[in-house]
Length: 282
Image 1 (spheres, rainbow, N blue to C red):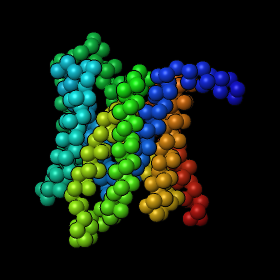
Image 2: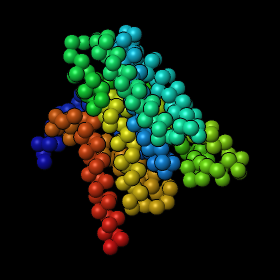
Image 3: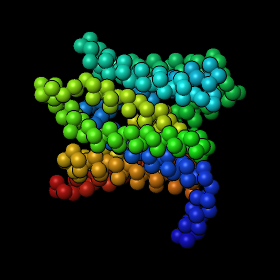
């Protein structure tokens, strides 16, 4: 035990390790808050769809040569896709799940095709795998990246606290919310845009394919034990932050992929909460 603590102390002397932990915890916190609303609205896979869009946007940024400032391309495309996904999902001819599948698969295929047609390195398979499942880029963060994540976390928390009652109403009964004068479409749009921003920031943490797990698992775990909206949100945030911190520390000590380790921790906690719910029912 002492050896592990000494190893962690040595690692945390490096700024990039501290940056990785701070960014990971902030992204996990924001993802958990949005995840509860997305799960309850049965729109969980918007995270999966937008993560594929972000992958396609990253490929476009690489082709255009925006390697150092790729966020200038990735962020606007993902936000626009979130808006289109919300509008298309409300179309009577194209339901929400079909819209997610259409946009996500199309963006993933387009991104992979562009990376093959216009390769930016000699090892395309490694680049694609690193982007999809996370890479060591979380350990190469700069101070500016930490500041961006901190600002985004403050914005998400502020939006959630200020509009808590409206988000609660829209989440559980959108039709009644509209009848009482709440701009449900506007709040849905706000949630979609913030989700897109968080997904773009989370790409460096867990990769494109694993982002939806970061959003869904903490919410589902909390729902196994708690029933009220506020209790689920608080528990989901605690679970998400705990799993992110544990996953990052384990990945540092065991040299495992950061994203996969965090998701594995989320799965383990979900199984524990599922067992607790079964025991309580028995």
